[in-house]
Amino acid sequence: MGPARRRAALRLRGGGFSVFPLFCLALLLGFASLLWLQLSCSGEGPAPGAGQSRGAPLQACPPQAPLPPVEDEPSWGPHRLALLVPFRERFEELLTFVPYMHRFLSTKRIRHHIFILNQVDHFRFNRASLINVGFLESGNDTDYIAMHDVDLLPLNEQLDYSFPEAGPFHVASPELHPLYHYKTYVGGILLLTKQHYEMCNGMSNRFWGWGREDDEFYRRIKGAGLQVRRPSGITTGYETFQHLHDPAWRKRDQKRIAAQKQEQFKVDRKGGLNNVRYQIESRTALSVAGAPCTVLNVLLDCDTNETPWCTSG
Image (spheres, rainbow, N blue to C red):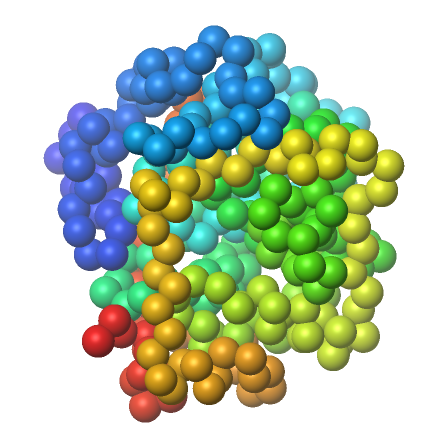
């Protein structure tokens, strides 16, 4: 590995902390990441709906069947998906997610580009702002997006990831998601055309820490006159997805300081795509077990007068 490439690899970090050397090596060397996956999961992968161990996150083995033909064949269709993955420090989940989703979408002949939106500043995690950044940085060669959690893998091949021309399509619908079942839920995996996302002015940038941003986005969707659609004919119920997250292993930042408690249920009628504040520290094309992705190291900015809860203090 040359000096320039080594420096680029060391920039991939979360929350301002340097990434341990094994992770950098696994991301930059396809052989190492493939070996990591093979050693950290069973030959057949976990059964749908399998429980999570308390010692370490459950891993899923990517299918080993050959990939379908390349994307330039006519059978792949005219649209291209930007898979936007908000991320911070969930390394073992990422190493499973990227090759699994690349194979899943390729098998369905969905043209796609996976963007890992790695928040590297010292503020609390902001999923919505990272999605806004991913939308703005995803380029003109993609015409629709998927807001996709890194810890949620689709197990049912009948799930539709195609261009959602008729309106936002909530893949991880309440009757299928293993954890969240309320009727206004639109988190986990949500597809929108870029035009529809702009009609909503993106997501609010006011939600620092875990939760609530997708509930506010549901109100934006309704305010834009759009109708959320969901899968039909899926019979696998709560075993439709594998949820990799273990709360004992990865604790979520659910802290609500005083000012934030008053704001968390309000609709942000001013902010979104128009006022997200960020810098791209670096953009790196990587291959994880042969699956391509782009890592954007994102420095978000926070106006502490507007949202003082962006810090942990």
